[in-house]
Length: 310
Image 1: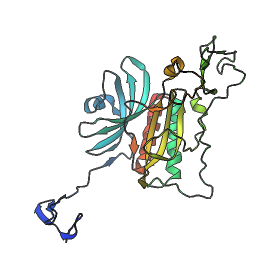
Image 2 (image 1 turned 180 degrees about the horizontal axis):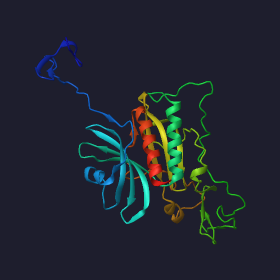
Image 3 (image 1 turned 180 degrees about the vertical axis):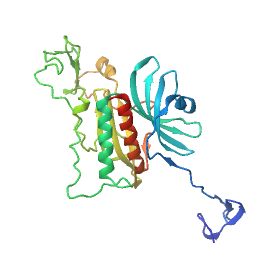
Image 4 (image 1 turned 90 degrees about the horizontal axis):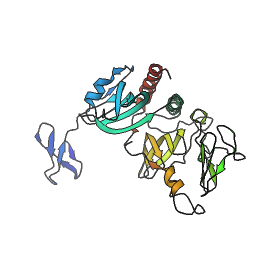
């Protein structure tokens, strides 16, 4: 006997193949068909024109040279693509892309634009793959996973000297930043604290929970790029109403430094609203729900690293 999921112990009646109805509440129940899921065991580089023709990539802005399919179902897919700007063929980057539907329309993306950034992503995914189980719960070990102090990474600005050329920097009239008259470098002051582009290859890759996330709760994550106006991280998150269902997400935030520098508000007040981090427009959803996808993603990124000679 098949019971109605709404009414409890009421036997539902078969109408046609795969469809039943409850005689009491009239609820229609459809048989759930298992989706055909493709997970790529060995990464294979596919010519980019295939992705250009079969996905939502816009040749007005970017061209896909080659790509690797990581995961595919009739409803969604994930691929790692080597692309370049339409007008700057030499400006190459890796785009991890999420597509939806049979039309492969854009669903989400994260761009990796330099070798150090790619190295960080690969290392972080390897760490997470080792430290968490299939449900993205931390694996308990003799030595607990260390959480960093959660402070935003700051550049150690000493004696007002330029971090690039070491010459004395000049403070702006509105006391918002220091600028170097020699090389043009700037150091932003956020409520008096100096903030500088932290070198991507020097990031500590420690776990942290201090991220500008509004809706979900960060279990823990790792920053792989942190600049004055750009922040990227790989984070395990969950909805507070369902803490047992954790998943991995790539986050990408930006903030408008020009608005802060040019603002007419007094620099003596809090700069939080002016320098607040916001999700990058167009990034969309970049979720990985199945931990088994981490390994093929790592393999794909390593193959593309070789292809790009990064």
